[in-house]
Image (cartoon, rainbow, N blue to C red; front, side):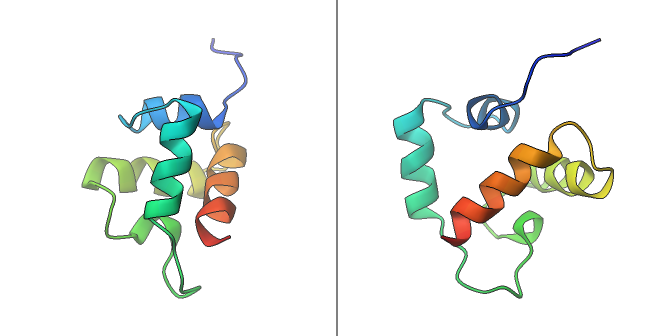
Length: 77
């Protein structure tokens, strides 16, 4: 059983994205969500697999949901 705490870095690794702090900041600065009408998991910059992972994390309130919520907040900030 995986009991490790998920972080923004491990979320980006899970999504197959560069996961160093500077790379995460760059991704967030490049991919801002300006409309509340667009759900995080429906943003056009995700692959189908990434969208499905995010959708499932949110829907099932998985152990990833907290860091996914953090990503959502940062992309809208």
